[in-house]
Each structure stands twice: as C-alpha cells, then as structure tokens.
Length: 231
Image (spheres, rainbow, N blue to C red):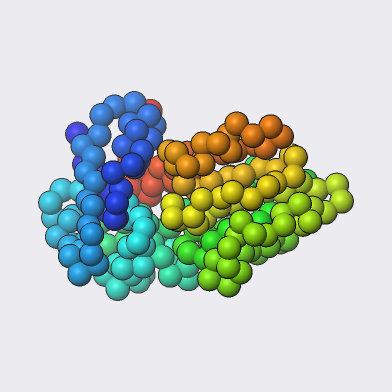
C-alpha cells in the first residue's frame, strides 16, 4: 500500500486522503502529521526513511523546509514556499502544487467576464497574484494587515461595466466573510468544510465554491510529481 503523508498544524479536517483514494481508486496508507510547533518539526530525511512515497506540507510550514531541499531539484522556489516533496535518487525534491492547480483552474475561467479580487496575504494569496501576473489579468488584492476589516469594504462599488466580481478568499479560518455582495458574484473559498461559510452557498445570486476543486487538482499534480500512476 502506498504511504503518503500531510504535515501541518490543526489538520484534522483534511480531505486529502479522500482525494488520493478517489484518484487512485484504492486505499492509501495516509498519515496526518499534526505538528503544533515549528521547533518540533522532524527532518525530511527522517520522514522519508520511515517509508513515505510522497509528503505534502500545509499551513503554517510551507516555508519551513526550503533549506532541506536540494536546490537543483526544486520547482517554483521563487514562491518561497513548497508543499509537495519526494525523495528520489538520493535527492530531496519539491514543487508547489498550489501554484500548478491554481493556474490550471483560473485558466478555465472566462477571464474577461470578471473582476478578480484576492482576499489575504499568505502563501495562497501570493500564488494567485503570481498566476494573474503571468496570464496578464487584472486583479485587486485586500488583506486585513493593510486594509483592516475586509467586511467593511463596499464590494458593490467595485463592480465594473459588463463584469462580475470573482472573489478568491485566501484568508485563514479566523476570518468569516459577512459583507454584502452584488448579484452574480463568484466566491471561491480556499477553505473547505468551513461551517461558518455555509450560509454563502444559500445566498441567491451568489455562486459559492469551496476549495475542493483546488484540492483535487493539487492531488493530481502531486501524484504526477511522485510518479504514482492513476488508473
């Protein structure tokens, strides 16, 4: 059985195992490595010696292992964050499937139909910024550190002629969105199974998406990186 793991903090809500087993159509020996403090992190070599075929890293440790990666075997290091790691031919290699999945999904949208708004300032917000810059698509970004209460923003006033608002919420689960939105808005939440945002799915004229589609595409890119074939 393939042994995979997810390392992060407060990750009991993770649905990654479900995604991998859906793609592989078989059970996976999946381990949640819930580490409360950075000083308690194991080394990558320790983890791979224990038999992991692939390792994912999530909040808040996506920048914690960059020094352990063999620099000739890392993709998208300019993001200063990695979330997908493998040990191959004596080398620790890494990539960022957040970026790969985000770009693949954004490029499926009718880009000219929307004003894109990123909420947040962490790794995922940085990734979406990079995606929009690469595909030359205009966007706005708001974060609590710079703009204060994001629920005080008048989102309706941001509507441009012939465009709808597409919000990408990259804020942590500490933030609950409560602001009024114009009809036709897409609200894409990078959180998933987040009960406090369930009300958004019931709002008329609002299209609410959880982060499941991103999670699914992350899993696809991770299996490809780990050289694990799907059926």
